[in-house]
Amino acid sequence: MAQKPSIPKGTRDFNPEQVAKRNYIFNNIRNAFQTFGFQPIETPSFENSDTLMGKYGEEGDRLIFKILNSGDYLSKANTEAYDEKNSNKLTPSISEKALRYDLTVPFARYVVQHQNEIEFPFKRYQIQPVWRADRPQKGRFREFFQCDADVVGSKSLWQEVEFIQLYDTVFSALKLDGVTIKINNRKILSGIAEVIGASDKLIDFTVALDKLDKIGEEKVKEEMLKKDIPQSGIDKLQPLFSLTGNFESQIKSLKSILASSTEGLKGVEELQFINKAIQELGLKTAVLQLDVTLARGLNYYTGAIFEVSAPKNVKMGSIGGGGRYDDLTGIFGMKDVSGVGISFGLDRIYLVLEELGLFPETVSKNIEVLFINFGDKEALFSLKAIKTLRENGINAELYPDAAKMKKQMNHANKREIPFVVLVGEQEIESNNYTLKNMVSGEQDNVSITTLIEKIK
Image (cartoon, helix red, strand yellow):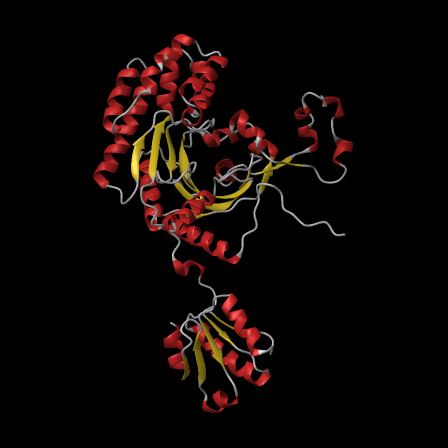
C-alpha cells in the first residue's frame, strides 16, 4: 500500500483562492514600495553558511536551516571534531550552505558584492521566502514570505519617517485600520544598560527585556539575574517597567532616567525628531507608539527599532518590524554604510485580514465566463469569441471536452463561474451567442459587443 503523501511541519500548500488573496497583499505592498521609490532585487534562496551564521545572535543561529554538502559528505567530514554532547562542532565540515533566515543579511551581502554597480543611497525592496527551524504555531511557520524595504547609504532620520508613512500607506490600502507602529531606539537600550551597570551584557539585557509582554515583569527580572545582571541594576529599571502615558510624556520620563547617559539621550533626541515629523505629516489609519521595552534581540540594530501590532481585537504576534543598522555591511568588510529597513509579515497579515473579513469579494476573481463545448465546429467558433473577450480584459475559457451539458454546467457551478455561453448551429449561423447568467438563470441571445458589455 502506497504511503500517504505529506508535507513538512511548518509548511503549507495554497489553493487557488489562497494564492489570489496572498497576491492581493503582495500587490498592495509592491505598489506602495514602488510609489515610495524602492527598486526590486532578488537573492538566492540559500547562502554560504558563513554569510548567515553569527549575524542573528545565539537564538537566531539555532534556527538557521543547514544544507548538507552534496555527495558523500561524511567522507570529507572532520569526525575528530565530533562530540556527542555538541554535534554543532561537526556541522561546518558537513554543511557549507544554509537557507536564508531573513532578507536583510543577504541584502547586506548583495550591497557589498555589487557596491560598484549601485547608486547610493540605494532603496531596494525584496519579496521572497525565508526559512526558520522554529516551532510551528498559529502565525509562525518554518517557510514564509518576507516583504522587505531598505535604504542604505544615508543616516538621515527622514528615512525612518518615510518608513512609518510606508507602513501606514500599506495597511490603509488593505483597509486594516487600528494598526500600532511601535518604535524604540537601540541607543536608549544601550543607555539603560549603561545606567544599570550592564553595558557588557547589552544583548542579554535586550533579549530578556524583549520578552516582557510574553512572560511578564517578574520572569524578565529572573532571566536578567540568571544572566548576571546585578540586582541593584534591575532595581533601577523599575521606572521603565511602569512607564506609561503618551509619546511626549514617556520621552520626558526617559530623559530623567537617562540623564547620565550621552548615548541614551541621543536616542531620545532621535525619537523626538521622528515623532515631531509624524505629528506634522499625520497618519491615515495607523498609530505611532513609543515602547521602551521593544528590543528585538538581534545584534545588528543600532538606532530606531520598529514593530507593528495588529488591531487590538485580533490576537496575533507582530505583523511587521525593522530598524536602523549603522554598520551592517561592516560584517562583510564595507564599513560606515548606514542602513534602515522594515519588513511586512505576509502570513500574519493574511490571517488578520481573513479573521476580520477584509479581503474584497473580487480578490478571488477567476474565470468570468465558460463556453460550453458542443463539438469541434462549435469549439472553434467559441475560441474566436474567447480571443476577443480576453483582448477586452475578460477572463474566459472553453470547457475542453465535448462532455454532457449537465457535467459542463456543474463544472461552472462548482467553480462559481458567473456566466456560461452556449454556441450551437443556430448561434453560428446568426453570429450570436446565448449568454446564461448562472446566478439569476436569465438567458439572452446577444452579439459579441453586447456579450462583452453584459459580462463586464
